[in-house]
Length: 422
Image 1: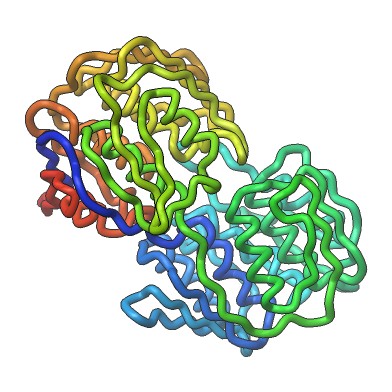
Image 2 (image 1 turned 180 degrees about the horizontal axis):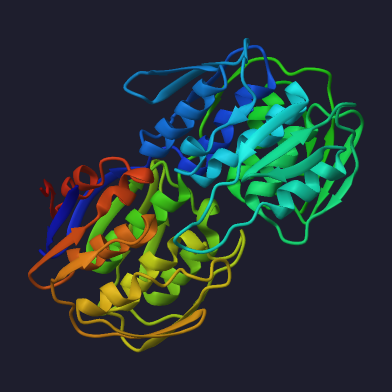
């Protein structure tokens, strides 16, 4: 098992290239199941979750080839020979459930394991099921698997989501592209990853309007064709690396970034005293004079502050001037990084879905343990500005969402290395 050793060493300087979005790519890959023709994704991130999705698609009979050092994924689903998404693969990653809608639309049947538990909280499939059943699917839970079939095909309808779930919106959107008639998704998720999926599906011949708003309308077509599509920039990786100079000082340009991907987040950085400037190549971030100012944060669905940047923002607030309140409204167990930051000297009080952080002058290095993907990188960010050495253990989570993190941070001046622990 790997650990990452970080030694606090002052301001950062340089450029960090931002990869394609993990969450977008994991949604785009199952879209290959909708067509017999090839789908090629460029700007793909090189992550363990992508390898897991590759394993799942291959188990269904799809062909997936990673080209150009993994940055291009060439996929073909011309000869699917299996409609069962096995638990042994699905349990590794919740995004595996995104094969349900495409298989149901293309094959008329799908058997998909429920993903199981998740460290940051429950993420049930009920909205996925309700939406697909509204389209005409018959779904039954047997021995931990969702058995879905649409013997008469899917038919367009109006679907009102109880919550703007990203995953449910994606599953319903993909399924409705091959449904007969018109489907309207109300209270749809508005995330950039939804827009990216819709853009790809349109390139494949789908008729979709309204993506990026809370009302998406889909006119079903008989078949989709092949396409080549570039994966959108990863806004969570972007926000994470924007916080590095905010925490450590210095100036870093995040290549490929756009403020429109992170409007609410950028507003909070400005409020905290961080300079954020969009350039021709990306976003340039620098800490203004003095300590960062404490700000309050509430996580919300897009275009609000992303839950996937809450842990990293908490790391910034640990040394801010004043007291900040972070309210988590998306996942109930997403403050597991707080006790680890407290081991480094942070002053944090957690009550239910609210964390109160009183900034200290300086954190101190300590051995800490990563509990989930975003918690892992929040501890690394905090360690980069701490006094002394920090050892972050159980960083296997990190490779699910960040490619070559030690290389990217090392190139802008961080003292960071990965070591094998026996």
